[in-house]
Image (cartoon, rainbow over all chains, first blue to last red; front, side, top):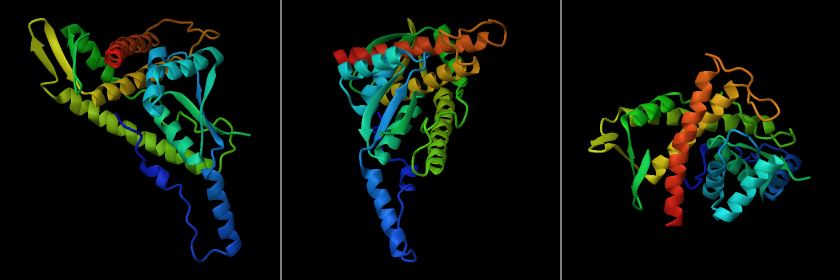
Length: 114
Length: 158
């Protein structure tokens, strides 16, 4: 099974300051990168009634490496409450998980934890 | 379709010719989910959200194009389904099981989207020549997904 390798599009998201930039702008870029590294993003899975419960459990186990009990807990949350908040991550990691979940056709998004 | 043996590296299934034809028909329906269907976020408050969304769409499109190509190659292999006394045998690696689950769920979810995403509050109203093939695809994908998940579950609990 694919153990969540980094895909090419993530590398494009890393911003690099160039020497031509003004010091203030460089500082802004650094601040932005720092905030993107902080675990301020929630990965959320939303209920699609068409998905099989066993399939959703399997995907959670595969993508997050969770034990069956934890995966089932979140699957039931999705099923009964319409959504489940999965990990709280940095922006880059949250994007990675959303991509993995969407690869399995699950309805997943990331939202800022405010 | 029934799991007859599982080893560390292979799952061996037995299936009838009729089941094989159904599986092939369902796999040929891939890809069903419309492109750029899935948003990265429901609330537009992410930094560089537009470019992040377009990168996600590109990554998924690339992945799906690869899946489509893989299905064609997978089905074209004349040794894919081996004749045996009791029907046909299908041998899958764990990676192939994972890949088939993804492909089948695309068919399932995509067909459901074609039907207007019905749910308890908005059930499907009409069964006709337009909607019936989508319902068929959902049920068939369900059948094979369930067999694959049972095989994985048996392996995990063994």
